[in-house]
Image 1: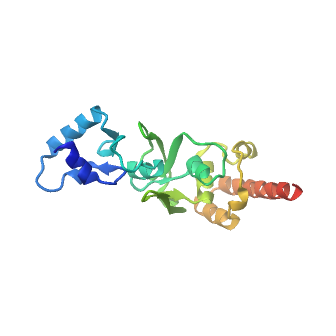
Image 2 (image 1 turned 120 degrees about the vertical axis):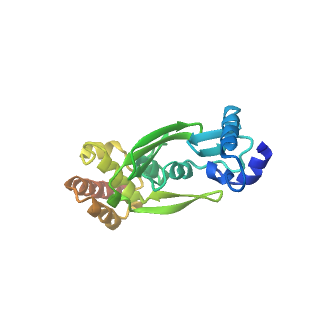
Image 3 (image 1 turned 60 degrees about the horizontal axis):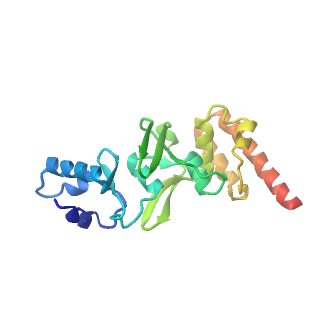
Length: 213
């Protein structure tokens, strides 16, 4: 396969898997050798085994980090600080895309970003939506309320008043408190109920500050 043929097959796809190239009468070993050569030549980025992205200037669509995260581990969704930052609920730009999965935890450092996958029980894989990210890309991302609960659940002492205040939560008027409590219920943990009470207090405090201003 020539590299030009690869570009025709991949088209506008921001990321692609080896299986896309194995249709028809092809030599799988030869395809893998070529992918390895193109990766070494910096024409491709290998994100994990069997998952690739075109490198500039060949890529037509820049892969969104959330889209990459979903493809890195199937059945995962973006959550915790990454989702909270996306929704504007914390002020920081988060350098690592954090997702949750029922599979094993893992971490990858790639040319297109760093990706962390945290393990949670299968019955807690809920409270996410499919977001449109532009450029024809989309990804599964936790709702704001679930992203916050996932973070608290996965953080030691995440239900402490000190920890929740260090997050510097902002734009809390966008939180749906009824939805927050719906997301607490599946965890069935006092820790999450305590945290939700504190978050409600922070919401009231922010609202009071706006009234004073």
